[in-house]
Image (cartoon, rainbow, N blue to C red; front, side, top):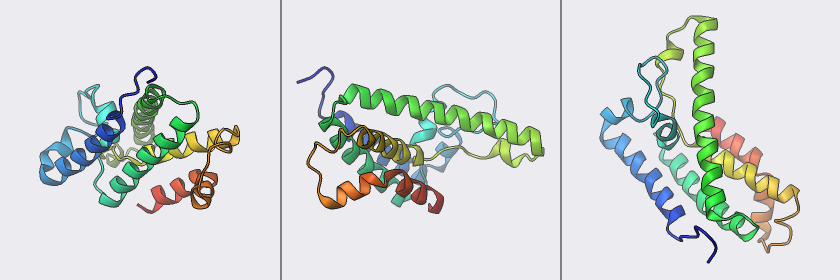
Length: 171
């Protein structure tokens, strides 16, 4: 067993996404604590991570969990360890939340609309896109070509970033 190859890590993240969705559904007061709101002061550091776990849409949660599990399985077959996969997801999550928060401040400064300051920043579309980009990068390097993929999976990996973009714009 390689370093930090605990089999329950990815299912734990999937369960966290499902629990966060249910928490937002059944405890609406958490909708003001977990996502980022640029106009609320102070912004807590934990919100940079939790903003990426909060999603209102059940189909987006289901697709993100499927992308997480299948993407981890495919990337682990290449050379990515679970630790690298988790590090990659954490970096993408925090940087996406920070960049979105900064963009909302810039949009507020440009347009002077309070909508940009008090909108709730959250969603797990970053997860779908991050896994799609990692799979596409591995495919371009030729690493996924050596692993046996069914025909449908190979086609999905080839067009993963476009499929992720289409899903995030329609959800």
